[in-house]
Length: 440
Image (cartoon, rainbow, N blue to C red; front, side, top):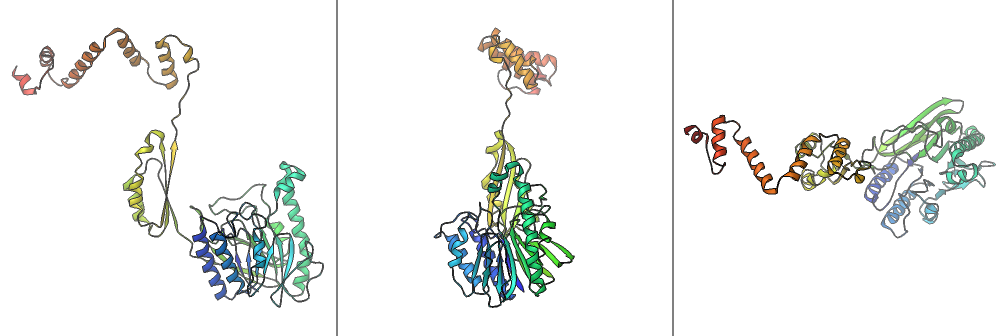
């Protein structure tokens, strides 16, 4: 059976253009490839949407267009992206072929008449006689419910243990289906231990729903996953035939720094084997340009010359001290990136760190306060103490005259000592030249 596997469409207010362009192109390609069924493995929406919102209308129109070509199975995704009940409207959407919404744990058969037949409980007691393929659906698990039962510290382990037992419990039904020559497919939304995120980060820890071992133990030929936005796959051959687990990845590129191609998976699933191919979508290109300090316009021009930013989404990031934040010329950066489809400027401001000197407010003498401040700030206090003494002993006029004399000494330091003396006697007034001094 040929199955088009889409995931993480993330239709939303800000993501609409990217999601709709990519999903629309994917539907066209799936139809051209002759898909006999379609799976959307969670997170069709990016957040809660009103039915009259443009993103809702476009998602409904595209799913309806997909259902006009083949039967569609939609799985409940992450609650924060796809709040419970979001998918209910798709049951009534209509279309040439039916749409099955899997918002509970269960199994569903696609019949030879291209209709969906769901199990009454979490699995089939007996397979429908006209089944053409069997799908085992495991939507997002509400960890909060598990935590309320076993405690937050044990919730992750408890979820993993329960899901492993559940997946193993699906295996007898899949063995019966395989004996009848039927393709078996698992569909879920969650994190596999050891998978890699779209930003290249390995997902290693105890707070993940699955291991590849638990997924293979379900004994399905194809396990179609959602949630991680990067395509990746695992394969195993054994008593259950040739098995493949795969993430389709997100349909488009919704964040900067995402690695890998974007698209959907086109599966060929048989009773004893499965294989999948990533079909690319026209996802946007993103470019990151990072400066450790203040953005250098010439360096930015060089970076733009090295890579084509025309039509790309470009993000420029920099880090500057708080006192230099106003020195960043944002308009100049925008001018250099005029050919980009979108620009995003992100400046990180490093705040000035001020160290408090304990007890300084209780000191009575200004000299003592100055010495303590200098010690905390790691500066030499002596020049400052000399200035403080001068302020106490001299009038403002005397200080000004001293400053003028110091300036004259610096200006004439290259002259002979006799010439310097004559200049001082003349008060330093007027304009003089080295020739005039030598003439005297």
